[in-house]
Image (cartoon, rainbow, N blue to C red; front, top):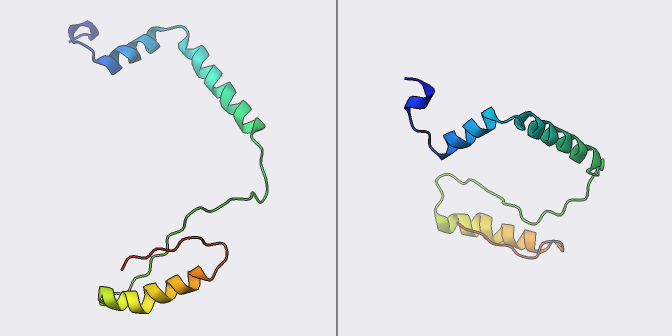
Amino acid sequence: MSNGDHKLGPSGIIAAVFQRSELTPLICLLGIVLGIVAVLVTPKEEEPQIDVTMADVLVGFPGASAKEVEQLIAIPGEQILSEMSEIEHVYSVS
């Protein structure tokens, strides 16, 4: 079976156009140059200031019921986390 004997799907047609095009190497070179420029232009900091908007705390308690986990882990943990001034919302699931 030669290449012309079977019908190409949409992605095959697009791939064939890029394989036959003389612009494909130029487009690849342009992408590489733009990537290099982006790396050089992007500002870099040794210690960037990053705002952590959310954090998950997972605690395993094998063999405990949901009520025990709530009483021994979730409620005390929520109270401790709520005392921190930077934390606005605290949610837990047991």
